[in-house]
Structure formats: C-alpha cells, structure tokens
Length: 289
Image (cartoon, rainbow, N blue to C red; front, side, top):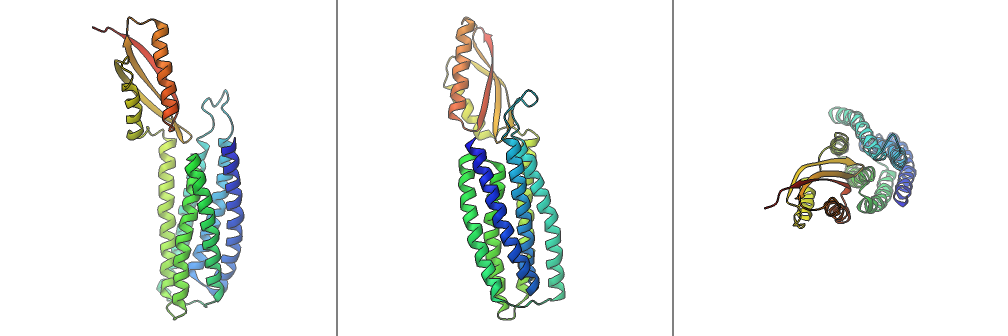
C-alpha cells in the first residue's frame, strides 16, 4: 500500500538525518563540554531508536489480515509507539542527571562557533523532517508518524533553546546551558508520557470518542425506519475503529427489507466517518403501532 511505503520512506529519512545529527552533536558536545549539546545528542540517539521502531512497526502493521489475525496487524503501530515512549523516559533520566550535576557544580564549557553551526544545521534538518512527517500524519493519521513528527518539532524548539544558551556563553553566562539541558530532559519526558498514554488507550481497547459516536448516531437518526438503537460497542483497529450496534425495525418488514436497511446504514457510516473501519449492525424486529 502507498501509505506504508510513504511511512517507510519517512522512517528511513528520519534515521539518516538523526545519525548525521548524532555524530556532529556528540563530537562538538564532548569537545566543548556543553551539557545542552550533550543532552541534544542523547535526544538524537533516542530519535534514531524511534525511527527504527517506526520502520519495524510500520512493516508489521502493513501485513494484511489472515486466519490468525482477522482484523489485521494495525496494533503493531501502538506496541512500537509504546516502546518509543519507554525509551524516551529512560533517556530523560540520564540527561536530567547530567544537567542537574552540571548546574550544582557550576561547570563551565568552552565556547566554539561550531556550537552555533551545529544548532543551525539541526534546526534546518529537523524543521524539514517535521514538515514532511506532519504532512504524512495529516494524510494517514498514523500514530508512529505522529510520534516522529512531534519529536522533530520538539527538536526544533529545544535546539533553539540550545542556541540561546550558546549565545549566553559568549558573555560568560554558563548556567543557562545546564538549565536548557534540564528543560530538554523534561520536554522529552512530557512527550513520552503523551505517546505512552495514547498507545495504552488503543491497546486497552479504549472506546471511540464521544464526538465521533455522536456523528454515528446522527446518521442513524436520519433513517426514520430505525425505531431504536441499543448495545453500541466499539474497538480500535489500528488508528480506526470497528463499531457494532443493534437496531430495531418494524416487525412487519420482510427479512430482506430489514437487512437492506442495515446494509445501507453500514455503507453510509463507513463512507461518511473516516474514523470508522467497519460497521456491524444486528437487526431485531419490534411491534409498531
């Protein structure tokens, strides 16, 4: 499918971009002892892992449904997104620890014009990757791509803070560097928690949101032959939902007529509501006065 090919391309571009940034950030960070740059390098290492997880998760999710997995393998996206979030949390500890110690010890670092150059390169690369992956997310609503897009966006903002800290160091103001390192760590943690929660909700079969559910009911209510609706259920399938419910129709209708009502309703819901992957309707007769 075109969707999975595009996501595969995005993950490969993300890997290549982050490997390049990791190399230059690590070299300059350790040569100058800049905690903000070292934190940024850790962030790039996490980004590489995220891109690898995106590649693997997308490959598994693209496998069609089979006898053992009737609804496909879409949840692989969320399993690997959860792995990304856990790795980001672990990375936060290392970055936060180094930055706090640096702040408490009043450590200084050596200013280099290369710190500014690396920051600018990072912002340009990450902004380009963000615009590309965000356009893919708007098109496919894939959680793995959403996680990557957020990561690229966050990197742009955090590297901008890194750039500000570097400029302050020109005037012998070094504590900003450690503070930026702490901010980067906390930002990574917040993003990780958001991704973890979203993945957890889907893996635990969280119900469809009330807004989408209301849209379904509005379509049902537009069919006057439907007299009553009960037992509305939903379950996530990848980034979409399978829904099912029972409708009551006039008991005097023939079996064929009753099922035609359900068939038209299923097709209309699947067509008009993109969040719905599959609609299954059960039919019960009722006495109509």
